Image 1 (cartoon, rainbow, N blue to C red):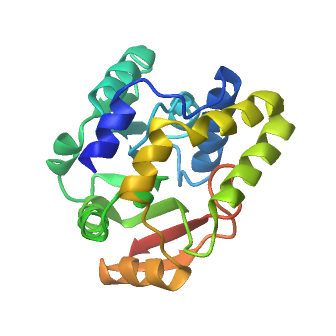
Image 2 (cartoon, rainbow, N blue to C red; image 1 turned 180 degrees about the vertical axis):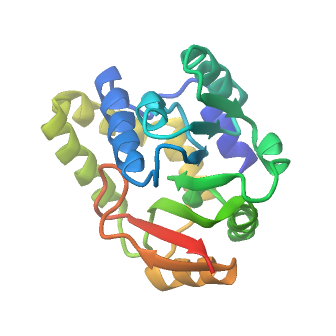
Length: 230
């Protein structure tokens, strides 16, 4: 995980254009917002990344806590949302110290693939403690074992066609072949879970769980799971 944090902490070209970055985070924010249970909810977005449109989620809840392991990402988030009163930015170490039942909704979006299984299990145990008794955990963008990398590329191109950045997406896919991300992914790999395996991990962590009808974000080949304290 440390090597992935170092990657996200430095400038990278994972997004093919400013348009790609903007619509990517807007789509995620709108999907997450749909899970906010009430206007007085406390929400944690753990491993939030750049979260450009976190204010869209904050508008639907009482308190939004953004957490990312990369210091530069947290710095940019704090600057971007300095004037949004109900958004705070915290490190993972700070989240560890929060009291039991602090959140009504916790979101882990596109993070599980970068964690070793024991790291994921540790996070799920933390989330079980941090969730209110009637709270909801959403684990999104889980990669199944049978999904090839070409499916990710196809999903990106379809998204790019709909959102108006198709040509930069094609060029970006070519750049990715030679990118640091591709090299790091090839060396470290990504964690994959089939539906049964992810359900089992969540149940073991103390949740009643189900697979959501659709995935958060643009990639329909990946999975999202919803879980409540059992």
